[in-house]
Length: 445
Image 1 (tube, rainbow, N blue to C red):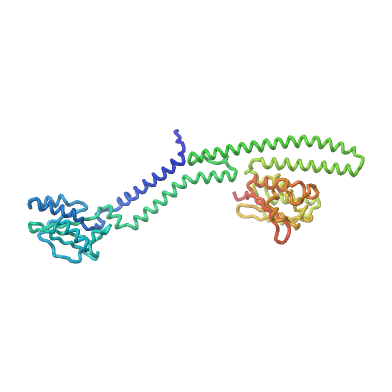
Image 2: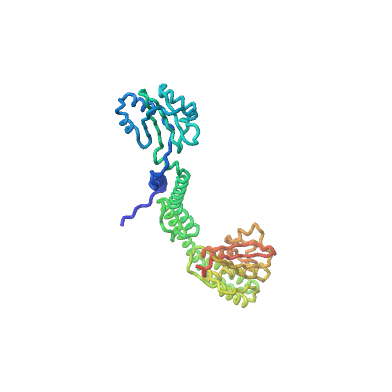
């Protein structure tokens, strides 16, 4: 099956203009075909003086027995010529002075009359378009004593359009808008799909379509994504190798610390080694979660996960107040990732909130929000945006007993982005700090 290549953007623009032109040609044609012309009331206009003069000259220069043939020759769909026995009575209000002057000049002094019917005002040849539903007749006396009458009508298609002008304009406007919107959407929709796929990191699910430039741009984004993914994977492998080697040296240092005779110094050395192990673990976790691929199929029950958190914290004698949930809530996140996020948020809340932390859950039709709150001093407003940056801490110390190394919130943010969620940090009005973990709801898909 032959597959046509997508058009380029400039070709699409040209096609839009061409289709729009064809639509504007088709509208009048369809409009004119829908009505019987015989039922349309004719429109009249003032005959052109020079044309009337030519007709009169032709009648005067031919024998009277040929006048009937001349009447048939000059009469057509827009001009009606009639042979009269005499010139009609004068109607002084039938034409403007300008029109009368032009007829006098064109007819060379021949007697003439301009007749109008109905309330159309004086016939004015200078009006454009000078059309009316009432006939405008110009009668001119011939040398033989008889006269001819000339009536000029508007062409039938134009008559129909003028008689239905508002309907015609409304039809053209509606068709014009529909054609423009449809053609524009065929060009802009691929751009919107590409922008959404890039924003949500869903280039692998993007269906090719649209102008060739948009397809090529999508392929370029996809190649860039693969290149960045390869760089992140390489970084993860490098960090894992470094962490593995460092653990070997840490194990040696731990064994050698047993030979330190001073008990206080031995305990301090072991504490430093444990902090280094924790630092390596946090760094490796942050790198892995930043490079991980999205897992749309991962689903867990938030209520069950909070029950596990409550049991685990109770064993550690930590005060965690968890608001009960009346029914299960399923979110797009894995069990391991959610437990890691809650652990990091609770560690911060317990550490800086005076040993007490609270968890409550809110939900709507599309998202589940887990709020972790404490009653601590909060965070300076200018530092809120920097808390999720790696190794960024408000407390200047790097000791783990006073705040860790600054990777906890970075890991939480990496995990939420992995599952297309969101992490919001704010100070509570009544005092304290609040972290809001927003996850996509799974039980409404």
